[in-house]
Length: 53
Image 1 (cartoon, helix red, strand yellow):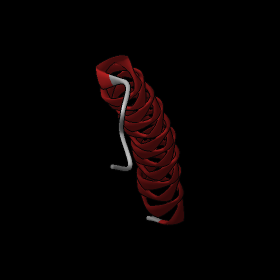
Image 2 (cartoon, rainbow, N blue to C red):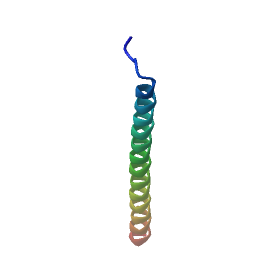
Image 3 (cartoon, rainbow, N blue to C red):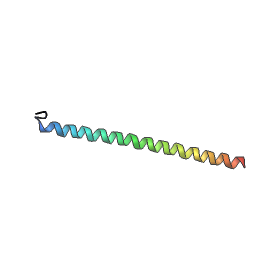
Image 4 (tube, rainbow, N blue to C red):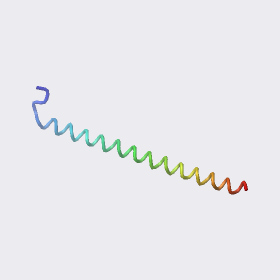
C-alpha cells in the first residue's frame, strides 16, 4: 500500500489545489498586464496616426 495514512491524500490534494490556484493567479496577472500594455500601444499608435495627418 502506498498510502497507509488516509490523511496523506488530503494533504496532497490541498497542496495540489493550492498550486493550481497560484498558477491560475499568475496566469491571470500576466494576461492583465499584457492586455494593458497592448491597449497602451494601441492608444499610442492612434495618437501617432492623428498627428501624422
